[in-house]
Length: 339
Image 1: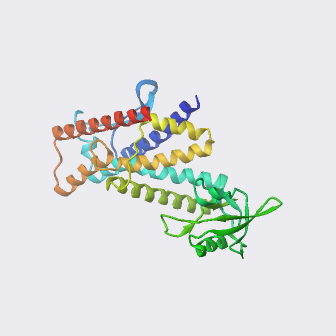
Image 2: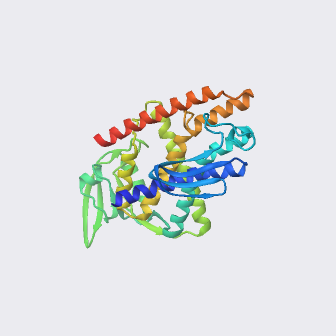
Image 3: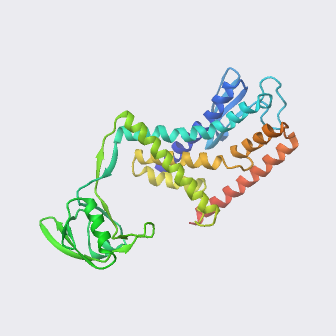
């Protein structure tokens, strides 16, 4: 039940925010929005407000705005239809969904940082975590151990630990530890960190919680969002370049992850929602048919050449895009079910 509720919560927020971006900018630019729908399938609820029908549907895995004249099969609306508006207005409407998905994580992180603060590394030389499989773990170092000296040199803070390990190289080094009321000496042979090329033993400092002001929370939320976006684009580049294995999860996999995260707490579920929102924004901006990025590319070509694609060409592009998305979804779902 928790997995189902978590799935509805996550998809509901992501879809609503994304479609709200399209909806608001369509209204702002004077387009006629005939329907604003969250979900697919049979209608659970609907109401008519002015010219727009608002509906909630049974399957919470998507949503849509029915903007007059946007579908190639719809009759043209020469006054308020999508294609009657300038290219700049249409570009804004197309990009607004992904833009909202970029903004949502900033707001989520701001609320989390303001409510919970952040955890920062302690300066005191106390082991907060021992990474399994690395030299410290193999030598018997435990969480909560206070490191007193490395190779006979007194340790006063966490920086001394880093410097002591770096100075030892990869030879076996004695480390004096305070464990409760007992003092013990453990010999550890550092390995080489593949990312930095420097000696390391696989320990992480203990953490302390720091409460942030609204201004600090806002700055931290922007920084966190920027770093996640950077890492996502880097990972996407490595996958395209063949340097990293592509991992694909469909609705089943995402729903399972949402349930697992929900068991850890509501704050973790919000973090998961923020990460998924950024993922959705980045993927949706790829220049592929049926995605917002593909639609934006078509508008960009129109802006450069001054010519619109014909209805038949637009319909063919949409069919190709829908077929691609359906194939990827089926493949991802199959992978989810066979993991």
